[in-house]
Image 1 (cartoon, rainbow, N blue to C red):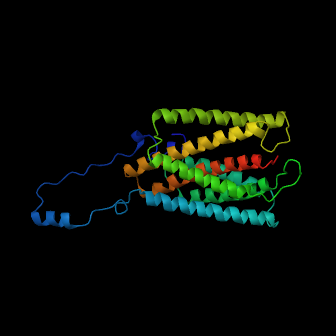
Image 2: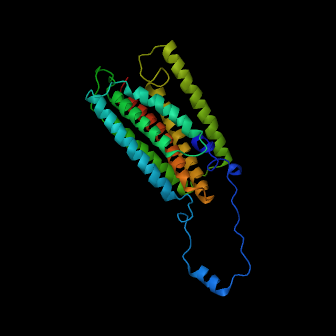
Amino acid sequence: MANPVFENDPVFGDPRRRPAQRAVVAQPGVDPVTLEQMYASPSATARDTGRLTYDDVIVRTGGLLALLAVVAAATWYGTEQGFLPPGTWVVGMVVGLVLGLVNAFKRQPSPVLISLYTVAQGVFLGGISLAFTALPVTGTGTGTAQPIVLQAVLATFATFGAALWLFSSGRVRVTAKFVRWLIVAMVGYLVFQLVNVVLSYVIPSGDAFGPLRSGGWGLLVGVFAVGLAAANLIVDFDAIKRGVLAGAPRRYAWTAAFGLVVTLVWLYLEMLRIFAILSGRR
């Protein structure tokens, strides 16, 4: 698995780490009346037996995304109106990173911690989105009203829909080779990002994204990162499917929703960078 949220989980990760399920053994000597009642009774669904369903994942994910959007909008408005200091998004970023790591390595999902992570990310995204729109545009020295945030949001959900369609239609299958390639690519991208951060201090370029994330080269890197995020979504979908088929407990819908939110936040940030570069923001 590429997403640590799913890889470190005993349900969505390696099938050998899943809890063993007891087989139901037919009991001999059932009388005809009892047998007829058993056949006449309605069949138990996954919800009746407390197992994970796709609906559970959809509801939890939708709820977290709604919470994320509300907090982000409130942070944007509060910062713009002066109710919150401009650097509030940094606090959200740090708190979100800490809570993200805690949730990723917890054996049992915590709805409270996952919700707090979403709130922190909402503060981060709302503040940094406003900061992106205020970046000076090449040749003007000021920001413009170009809706790069709306463009990034629409592109994020369009990519999510495309990844879901590719997975559900079977056009892209999650194989061991696919996962190995993704892990190697993710490690390479992480190293690249670290080098870019170091170079931004060694070689000041005046660019908000660092010397390796600006201009045409930065645009290519952004497209590559979007491809990685989309591939991660496909792997996430596969993990959720295996969890549902394995009869995982319903509480793990929180883990699945958390994993999807983590990937979507990353995807949105990459989209925001791409549209910022395209709009000429430095």
